[in-house]
Amino acid sequence: MKNEIKVAVPKGYLFDQCVDILKKAGYKVEDLMEKNRKLSIYSVEDSIQYVISRPMDIPVYVEHGACDVGFSGKDALMEKESNVYELLDLKSGKCRIILATLKDCTERVKEHYRHFGSVKVATSYPNIAKKYFDQKGIQAEIIKLHGSVELAPILGIADEILDITSTGKTLKENDLVEIEEVFVSTTRLIANITSYRVKYDLISKFINNIKSVIK
Image 1 (cartoon, rainbow, N blue to C red):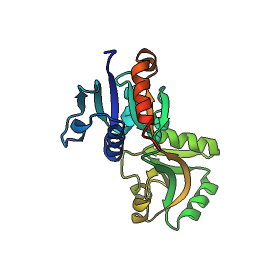
Image 2 (image 1 turned 30 degrees about the horizontal axis):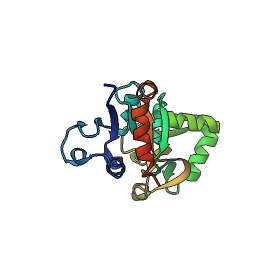
Image 3 (image 1 turned 135 degrees about the vertical axis):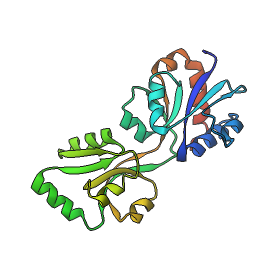
Image 4 (image 1 turned 90 degrees about the vertical axis):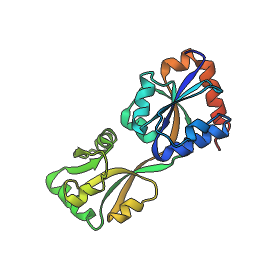
């Protein structure tokens, strides 16, 4: 409907931060804050349909018009390479995409590369990893995993990992050390290209309300 917008909100660690931003911006979020399994919640007061989704799916939903706008981590945007408008950096949900290897194994990894001319990298971000190593001119065998990427060097299936970290605690607990920071990810507000044109007034109002509470 033209008089309402659909907003994608990520599950997981970004959820509370996004809901807090919505609340500060004056939106009714009581139903969103309820601990239930509903993935689609309609706010009558604000004429907003909230869709709660996996962070990696949000750029896809927004690109294909299932949602008009969405809160998405920059990591998901770069991995999915979705054709959407990136409207606002919310400066929250900060985390880093880093390259890491087992403690005391950095020299062994370098030696392996010198001998074989390639490196094995486990990651949940295969597109980001490929682009990163292509830019470095390094031949890399990318091993895609969907979780517990830290196990890959321990089990011997990868020399390095490219993964997301916020505190570095998981790396330390698994005897991994950071080799290099690839980039810093924060939460972004994105919009479907067609929706932004057709629902410009509604989406602009939403953006301005969110922008007013971003420090």
